[in-house]
Amino acid sequence: MFEYFPGNYIWNLGVVATLNSGGAIDEVDRACRPIRDLARQGSDVGTNEFMASWRRVADQIEEQAADAEKAGHFRTAGQKYLRAAAYLCQAERMLGNSSPDRVPTYRHLLELMTKSIELIDPATTRVEIPFEGGSLPAYLTNASRDGEPVPTMIMWNGLDSTKEHMYTSGWPAEMAARGISVLQVDCPGSGEALRLRGLTSRVESEDWATAIVDWLETRSDVRHDRIGLVGWSLGGYYVPRAAAFEKRLALAVAWGANHDWGEVQRKRLAREGENPVPHYWEHVLWVWGETDIPTFIAKAERINLNGVVSQITCPLLITHGTNDRQINFDYARQSYDQAVNATLRLFTPEEGATEHCGLDHLPHVAAYTADWIEDTLTELGA
Image (cartoon, rainbow, N blue to C red; front, side):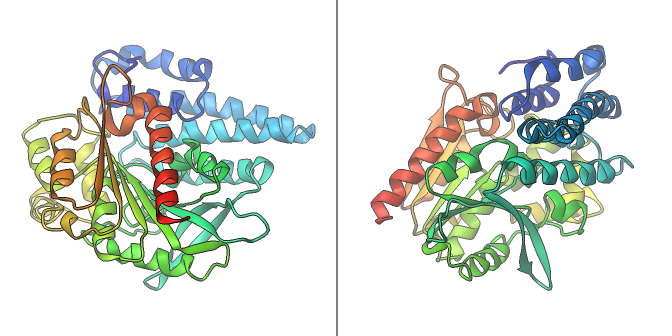
């Protein structure tokens, strides 16, 4: 992995994720250069300064976008709004949830995303999916032309990502170019659902899977028999869990395995492996709606796929990097060994995409996943 900040895994992962999701290397360098010395003090120290440095660059790009928009250069404006949002999106996830900057920053990046989508991406719209008396916010990147029904992939976050991370990765647009729509959902415990609506996560991810499939089945531009589900990071638990119990799903992808996330938490208490974000335990308690670590650890005992993955009947893809420093690739083998209809793809250091979710070479794992989905839909008769 490219390591801008030697020894600071979490900040480095944020840099490569940004560069692999539309970030410009000059802009990322200008955001990172002032905080290089601070990075040596560890991931938790200096996250406010990280936010401030990245915000300065994002603000400059936003100003350029506004000038371009006033001049009628709408594609330039839309592209710049998108990069500004991407930088804020990455910096926001570094903050602790108690930071007073977190929610205002997230609200602002939502505004930038909206401006960008309106200017340059007519295929994408913001939608709301009814869920338990409220709704889940999502972006739908629609591959349908003239309203014809097309296959659709539901896409889910992990522990610390948002639908904006999914959108800026470029993967939904790539799938739409292949004739497959992508519904990018902030589920309970992630993104806007957590930050602005207070929806926390739960073991039973099939609850929101069912609500999402119900909503998709109301749309005439969706092939109801070709709805798939993909999720990265902790989505590697959420997706197989949902696919085991929501039988309307035609295929599923664990973009990074997470067979026994509860065990991973016990190891993190023992300081084994890397954390995904600074202020880790504060973040975890926020996501899961708990107030203390012992209560959370007791709940986490249930966050595993033993006896679950074997109930998945649709085709399942499991991808994982052999140098994933957060989730050991042995967990990918556990899911694969217990599955009945699965493909396992491990990525090596020689080819790249070997870190967590392939963030060190996101286009490589993204292309493999897209190809597998295409091939599987063909086999299913899409």
